[in-house]
Length: 559
Image (tube, rainbow, N blue to C red):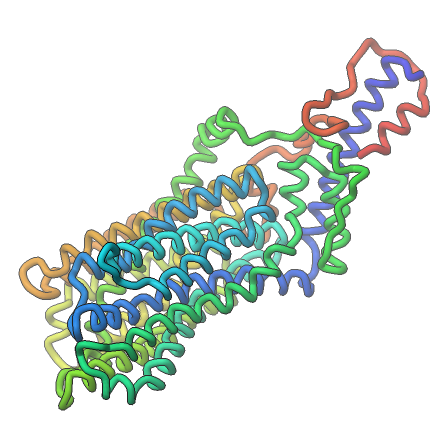
């Protein structure tokens, strides 16, 4: 039987072994070469963001169709249109907070896929929404869009954290950008699908009476419903993606299983649960309310959360608010509402077709190129310089567009210049803070708060989107139709200026490990080892003695 000193020595060796195993596993992840598994993780996460963007942007054209159908060729009221368009943002706000918290406390893997199920259900619900004597169409539509928004919100923190925790140190920025850039393709695809569906319905739209716009009713339901297809494809892969080793080590406290996972998934892309060691738990810092207050009560940590949250809030004020100006831009480039054709049905068709084609042009002209400019530079130039540059350029652009609004739009060449400035704003949002505000929160927080911190930051951004959609939609017509738009652009410039200062609170994250970025001391991060799972007790300490025994060797082998 081992002496008390031998037990204490075995206890020490046990902790050292756990710490060394953790450091070795983390190093293997951080220095891994790009592999099939990394590509798979990007695609599986990216399809979710593709679906999110498709569902968000498809409502723009669908809302116009809904106005035609339920108002006999007319338009939704201001409140109806706002309710349909802002419902998903409110749902997204709650989804980001909820899933951010649950992914840290329940597990990334356990939550991954649930958000897609919610999106699928919410999207299908929209496609079968109808009107009845006891049911208001708009009320039910808003409910389903809120539910869909909860799923979209859940996708942000879970996908970001899973991607960052699986990514190697030197390619983490590009992997996260590749995931987020799928939004641009979702936006682009929603416009492509709209063009195809509307063009296919041309004859039926021209022939239908204004009292029965069945062709347009079918068209908007089909456009929205197609958004379920990529989500359904991605669902299986999300449900079978392994838990991240960092979560297994730092939250489940199972270092043995995490080490095995690293070796397995980097070679085969799969993982195997080891039942013999699934009850072993290392002693590491745990996520509690007291620990949360202690961690973020330090200015060095609090300023990072403030920086990520405010930067995202400021960015989304302009990112979503800029959509208020899309009608002006589309009209300027010849893709506005049609009013000159012989029949109202023909004008409805041409208006819908123009809006769809115009959105394709805007997506290609600024949104998509901006994502890929970030992709190529994010791991060499860095996240912080890109975000600072983006906020600075956007401040200048909005100052020009706002204070020079009347002068610029007074001439034909000025209108063309305004279109160019608009596209440049789209470009520098994505080659700038729209992408980096997604990346940085997925890197700068400890594992036990990484998803929560990302969820808080993303929800702050969505709060900005709600402010823009609700507040500015009420303000834009002060003094006459679109008369207040120039002042809204000036307000955007102010928020972009504040984004510069909030970015200064953030660290540069390129080529750094997630553990270094957590600002927590790592040498003694694993303090002890508990055998037997939750509720078990560490080996006892006692007075020193000498010698060695089989008990010591056995204890050392456990981890």
